[in-house]
Length: 162
Image (cartoon, helix red, strand yellow):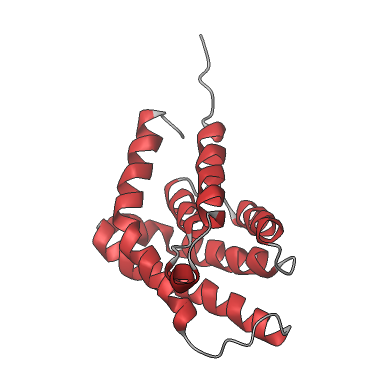
């Protein structure tokens, strides 16, 4: 009997695409509106395959994003680990919600991770931004979520990722 590939390459490829979207240059006026692509892809995989993608994967994804963005090592790793913990504790409930209802939860989860990241940046004098404009990224992430969720689910089912 022939064994199928586990589909780990689909997870890795989706994260790679999210990294590419995270570093695409934006104009200065639109920087706050950038969706948090890596966080969104992580939320999807944490929800869909909690036994394959966990806190360790989220931490490594955040550390890699720190390296890509040239930020203080561990900022995104810490916030993504928190994101993974919260998503894993809610994943069974999240599966019952519609994609639109999940958008509200995504808004809160991504907003929380962005707030933690901003607090650390302010505490380490990496930014002096006192406004809440950085939360517009959480709003755009929640807006994008229903379409990303449907696309990722189709991808997972199409390649039979289990």
